[in-house]
Image (cartoon, rainbow, N blue to C red; front, side, top):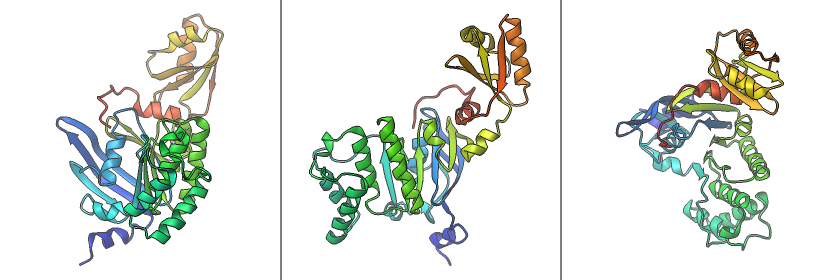
Length: 324
């Protein structure tokens, strides 16, 4: 009889993560509610959602740190949580909070993690030298980690997470505390890893980061409300986004907010961006509402973007307690 590992690998060679009916309850609170996920190998897969949407809880279940209440999980051909110990040798995990030792040097942190993963002295020396060069720590090897900048700490944490060359990397809002330039450099490293065959599951609050992912999933109150390539998800909203150019944008916003069929009205500079519900004659209804308010304005169709996707997927749900 074939093992669970061999069965999962056969026919699933292109899939890194498959979860079906994933549920996590904390008492009466349902943090994750029957989520299905399929993450292809060598992809950057983005996780989006409001605070408390269940992103972190889902990631912890997928990597074996948290036991699901219900559901089936296969990661890299292994059953989770049953084979979580074997899985931990093949994955990396990184959070937004710096988790290395601040009183150790850059090199000492990497050497410690290499020892944790069982690298030999020769392997450790070669791998640490490689990562010091790759993540731009030349000349800083003896610097205490606690004295590094925010961006440098995140680069060091990423280097530590890949010390053992994991097949799959979990990153839980890894760039939330760093500046835009450091975020851009960090993401270049992520794509280098993906190009080399590593699968990455990344949660983020930043729409510009999500747009860079091969695929994204949006969670809201523990429910999967959108899943697909960013461009395709935006294209599915075609005809629902418009730009309003009015001499008095604040008055125009007041006239349109709360209008039936209008999901959001956001001021961007001197214009408004409006997202309508599906099946609505958005342009016609908006023109009528503006005319009724005595306002002259242009109503122009625009391409939907990922922020529109996020609003369309999550609008109308009451905020829950942050459980993620």
